[in-house]
Length: 316
Image 1 (cartoon, rainbow, N blue to C red):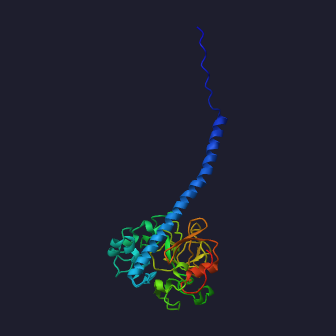
Image 2: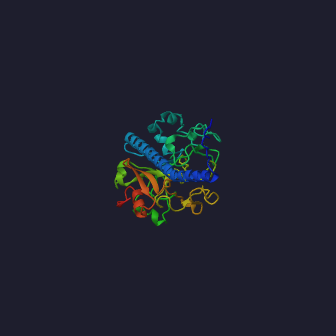
Image 3: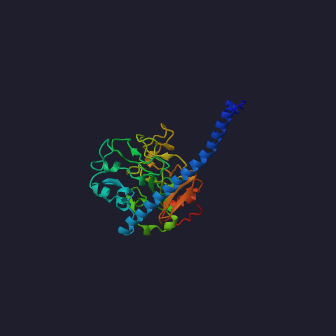
């Protein structure tokens, strides 16, 4: 009996396979930027939420201390504002374990070449997800957590440089800084009621980019250190612009870190920086969060950096 032959099954040719692979590659290429954009948007929002929590904690501290903010940095014994804020970010146990009578680099606050010291304990609130969550300072034997959030030092370098027009007292002083901008250079503890320009017109905190490697001897992100200019940012340069000046930077040797020079480091400063496209997240003294564009006018940025300069910040 006659039997019909089954239809032959034609396989893909090599050219057809290559066309399919090429189409898939194009689709992936189109999809990746969108995925990365969504991921960065989520990271930016998470970063802003961290700043919001820092702001809530700052206000809680001020409420308990007659509207006074914590000192940005204290040198006898050495510590920074973060220590004083721990109880208000649900880290009361850490605060109790920290020995307030000892320098931050002594046990139990820091155990040399170990991550077991209190200062080396990382917390999610220290980090912007766009950067390096969990980063540690290992640039010297006093291991400590790095972080992305720093307080507003305004238009003054560290120490104050009376010969720099950008630091003129006519620009006013920031919520964090020195007592009077004079040669004394003593840490100032401002009150929220000292902010004459209005809390909605005054920066309290912003972001910085951390050094790429834990072992980099680079103070960007060294927010737990009272040295200059570690736990603060300056509004002398607009966000993500200029070259930071510090005695502790690897800018020349490690070009993948933010631009930095040791030249002129007797008067150190660093700009607010982030890995977000186009600007930085900021916390204002009224507790509000604003994304400030890299293109903000320097006069506006410096006005936002001061708390009693009577400037009009303008649009940002």
